Length: 98
Length: 498
Image 1 (spheres, rainbow over the protein chains, first blue to last red):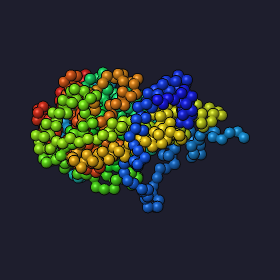
Image 2: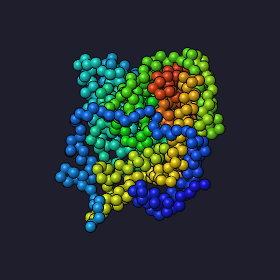
Image 3: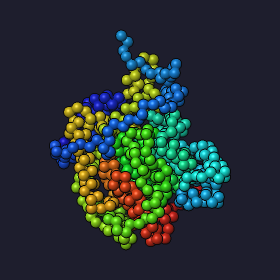
Image 4: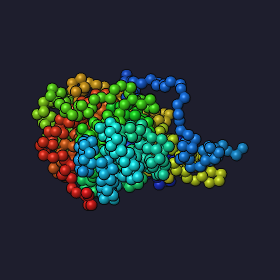
């Protein structure tokens, strides 16, 4: 039986960039014990000789001809921006002070 | 007028008996009358729909040659972008977002002069089987308003059953077109993966997502299928081959000499009595129509659900990283000095609902170092085994069949706190997505014990979509002659319905 503690879930939530309340962390941790038990069944069947399938189509990279085609105007591209400045997306501070 | 099939509406439009403006207005009136109870729509584009309809009427008047469905209205699942029209995916994180571009499906609908009435409700980011996970409240099943309409495309299916639209677009990652069709007594088709462009379909699980037609008859689904399908250079996973001749197949409905494989593992224990009874009856009707019924076995299907709930969350944890509060959508906590990371954390906490968070965290875990091989890696191997099972089964049969889901529509709230019980709804639909083949659900009657509709699933090999339409049309014809009318003619009337 696999389980995830409250702290495990907190670490994963951090990686996934989701702030979570203590109540949420605890209840998710309880749910994951059940869910992980169910999904762990995938380990029962496939031996080392079975290849992995990541995609239903046998595709390699698909390229288009390298020619310029029309794309979104700057106004359209910025139309949903929470904040903008000088035809750019304005975002909160990314780097620290120093 | 609104109770006609889309192809009947198209004939009346072509003969001049009705106009697209009149037809569109009739559907807008029905939406005004019943959608307060059904809640199939998140957004109704009254002006846009009427303007589009007037333009089609003008084209027709001028003698222009029009496509088969020109002037017929449609409901669009809110996971598809339409330029300038709110697109929320049932999520708070996209509330108020108006995309600056059309999805290829919408481009194709507009090219075919199909009228887009508005956007339909869905489980948030298509994660769910009941439409209860919408941030904007649940959709109600028109057969019984206390029950779920299926999910994630519950809005599209409910709109059809409530005669709010004769056609709709859905998307199917693990059953989100077929399961809603089954529980609402409508038709839903997941085409072969790559058959319909994913450009502008907001991604949940990219290797499984597929858009497709929802309708009230098999022929209507086929007409819509041909309108939206085809190669698209904007989607690198779009198949560059001719669209299967699904309309011709739906019109002929010939199953003489076809081999129909019953999947042993997708029946029996866990399937409701009335679901099994309707399935057996449909098999008898297909045999009487000249098909040969054989049994096939797919021993690895029992692992499909477990593999799905690793693969889909893994892909979603990556796909939904784009909702970072920087370029569009919700932004929370952007105070002086707040870091980008804290803004992301707060926005995603407020913007995502419970099930979406659950799957993102599960996917993050399944992909994390030390667990990758045991979870995501093993799930990908199961995917190979499922595809092999299908390949073997299709050596014995032209199409495969099963009930679409184990039960009829359950009560709203009944499974909301039990994620695993909810996931079991998709047990018969998920294998199709894992292998990328085609799948259809059509109504096979009513379960005697609860009076609710039951779905019959048909599965066809990659790019042989026409086969499921042949079988679907044959079964539909046999059932209609048995019932004397389509199943939806027996649906209880909604208050205020036209």
